Image (cartoon, rainbow, N blue to C red; front, side):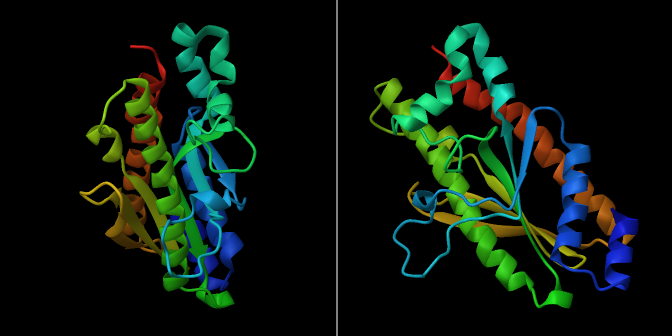
Length: 237
């Protein structure tokens, strides 16, 4: 990642090259439980609600979520044959939104999105941050849907605070500069916010290592604790 980033900067390469650097790192650090999708439109109905801004539909450069097959395998002991199409059925019936795309393509519950820009081709961090804000809030809406589903199934008046506290992460870049953001529900559970956690320069070796450590930790959380939480909600009590 460090050496490729230096080459990209020296050659003033564009967004596709920087996206490839980030995707390669995520792919190497992630495991079989993780799914990665690039440049694909999300459903228009998961955009931030009640916005006065003209916000484009989410289309993250990189979207990382739990692989559908991994969830099906984890649900099989309790759901049996129903595990293979459970989430698609729930989404078709408007009971639970688990994937952001118009059609199911193997990725459920995105927890990390990335927006890559290059100053060499006119992109900047401000653009990346705005796009990440839309993608991050869209991903949070899926966890809101999970919390609402949990409340309905368990006949609870209030949504589960643990599920509403699930964060979503985003990476925004302009050339070698990479930022890590966390997206979260406000205390009232109805509004979303985002806070920058770190900023690094990928052409600095120590910074590159720091970024990789944090990305690895997010992927480990998503493929472990987060996946288990989702399975617990979908499994019978």
